[in-house]
Length: 249
Image (cartoon, rainbow, N blue to C red; front, side, top):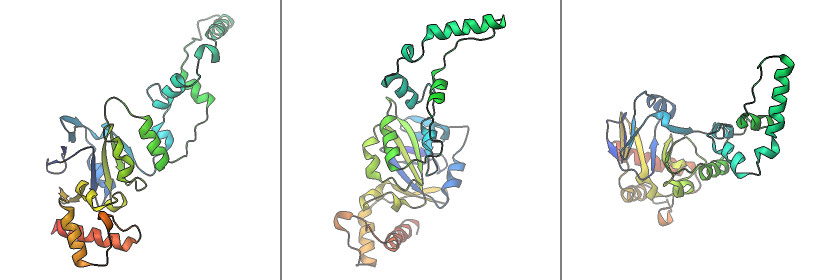
């Protein structure tokens, strides 16, 4: 179960993924910022700062900061052919440090190797590269930890539910989007969609009813095995409008 305090403290079904459609995603995420825990997942409470927020403007450098706790640093230091004693001869560097202090006549310099700084000087990381589907999926694979990480995907339209379904044991996902049809691929996915409306989350509870209404109103839709039409934004817009009418009325 998941509870978001903003939405009347209601509990909603949750198995690792929820899609919240909002007319103003930026305003919604701003309202979620608080010094207090505002999201409850299972028996755990979280602040918005406990979530990694990813949007189309997120850069690779945002996800791969060079610090001792970051996965890229650990990969370089622990997984590659990175032998500190070979690359940086501590004995020579300590001797150089002593020579500096002897030259000045004071304990002016200290030998304190910081390998995160060294890596930054050796490697030039692209500061302007934005994430895409491939790099985000790769990051999800790289960032798996023993405990679940919390991720908000904000209007990330290049990722579909099928792309991340295998990661729900490693992450808690919240999609915030202004169009859920950019994420879902079939009508069965509607059970994960909630529409923000006047302080509540309105749930699409029965996709069979939705499918029936779609066929009833427009028999031209051809959906095999509940598949949404691949082409035609107008068709998807019609479906979305029907769903909103069914839920909000």
